Amino acid sequence: MGYENRTLGDLPMAFADPQTITVSATTTPLPRTFSSGSESAYTSADGLISLSANHSVVKQGRHRRLLRLDYAKMTSDPFKPTENVKVNTACYVVFDVPPAGFTNAEITAIYTGFKTQFTASSDLLITKLLGGES
Image (cartoon, rainbow, N blue to C red; front, side, top):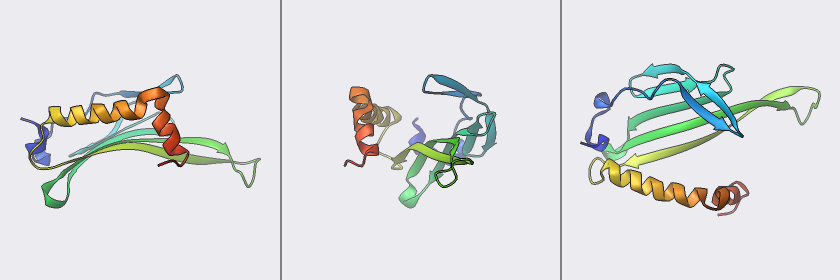
């Protein structure tokens, strides 16, 4: 049975603990820092990197599945170059799943095609998107 037919209370346990993320060849462990019901969060020791997952039921019984990476850093303040400020960005993927009609295998295949599209040619599509192209 795929998760698309389960209620939120029937979802399996959280991801493995810890999770890890590698950004620019630096791997950071992300131990679980929060887990409640259908949500979990994994955060770096310095609090600058966080991976979160949550599941919710939205309009017409659709299941929304979210995986989000929040990434922060300290950088010089453009208005006061001698002072540092914390800046952050986020990347996330959302699966909006109808209550019936797709199996997890079908949704995974759709995601794999999507992922292949945006990672092709050294992430060229993402580079163009971040540059403002559409």
